[in-house]
Amino acid sequence: MLVTVLPFIETVVANTSNFLWTYVLSILLICTGLYLTVQLRFFQFRFFGHILGQTVGKIFKKSSGHAGTITPFQAFTSALASTAGATNIVGVPVAISFGGPGALFWMWVVALIGMATKYTEIVLGVRYREKNKKGEWVGGPQYYIKKGLGWNKVAWAFAFILMLELIPSIMTQSNSISIQVNNSIGWSRLGIGVAIAVVVGAIIIGGIQRIARVTDKFVPFMVFTYVIICLIVIFAHVETLPSVFGLIFSHAFTPIAATGGFAGAALAQALRWGTARGLYSNEAGLGTAPIAHAAAQTDHPSKQGFWGVFSVFVDTIVICTLSGLTVLVTGAWKEVSSDDAASMIGTALSDVYGSQFGETFVSIFLLFFVLTTIGILVFFGEKQAEYLFGLKGAYFMRVIYLGAIVLGAVGGLQFIWQFLDLMLAAVVFLNVIPVLFLSKEVRAVTQDYVNRIYKQKKDTKKIDLFHESDKDFRS
Image 1: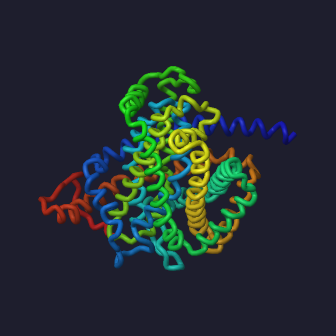
Image 2 (image 1 turned 120 degrees about the vertical axis):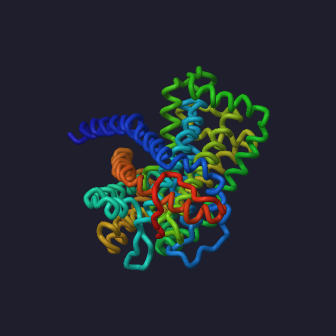
Image 3 (image 1 turned 30 degrees about the vertical axis):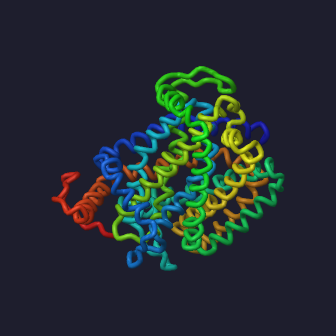
């Protein structure tokens, strides 16, 4: 009986998830980003130079004396650790394989409007954060939903569903890397899972401060290395760039015929895969970034929100673009079939570095990225358990998450994975709707920053962006 019921349930879950993420959630997240972009008067574009100056321009500046547990840069790298990795390196070629070169254009569009969403989430995360019993600053959607709107049940539901969703999310992460490393290097999948669990356990036992000390050194190094590796390949084929960009822009609005191993793609496919991959890549609207950024040392919510804008820029505009250009300039997107699209970036790198390097590099690179990704995912889960059940609940879930790493690596309980997208959909709904209700407050916070801080630096007349009175929103 169970054998016949399970396939039916899996089919229903898969079809429901596909419908939600293809239509409902994509439209919701895009419309949310557009609404917030207009609400903030295109803040992420008009002040982009200032945002860069306040983020990457101040990486080495200490922020001691401000309320917070970790530095703004550490909060940024901790949040980036959960998004940078497999989605950027493997996910982008998959999107191009199914949606064509035009999918890259729609990734850019989603990223540009998603900057407003992520900025808004982080501003609210810092605005409504609080100290826990250990003296650490904690925050996230559950806090701004409860304290900002008084929706206690919604806040509880968000924390509970996200806490559960992270179990299959961690399992799929460890499973994907165990398969990749096992195929390319031959290491035991069980051994890989145990090793990852031990390393992650050693990191997270020190809390957000130890996680931050790892990510603020490791993540920038990995990103920088990947950028250089891709740029060398792209410049080796620099003569193809004009035609590649022509493909990206032309087939963002027109279908593309089959060529080589590429099966062709309609306009709807380019739009679907580009937007979906862009949304998955930067996680704007998911509500996880505010959890990490709430611990940052900052004297104004907007200052930390800038790091959200910058993270979307790095994650999608930089890393995803380089992944896409690498497979396009080398022609790997036409050589590798969609069934094997995950190996496309390795094939593209092999064009310059040799076949052995391409596959091995991707495997090792993903292994190290997965370590930081799983580490921060466990932290996110612990914070939900802490909100719901206190510190003891957080410690209990830590054990569950570490066990999920090993179980996922060997491919156990795959049926649970079918519910991952459904739970993610619920998390997005429970976060985005409150964000929209609180958007006017974020607009006022931003106006406060412009009037009290930005205008003093520029020594200009008062800039009234939103026609609202000054309010003091200092954290």
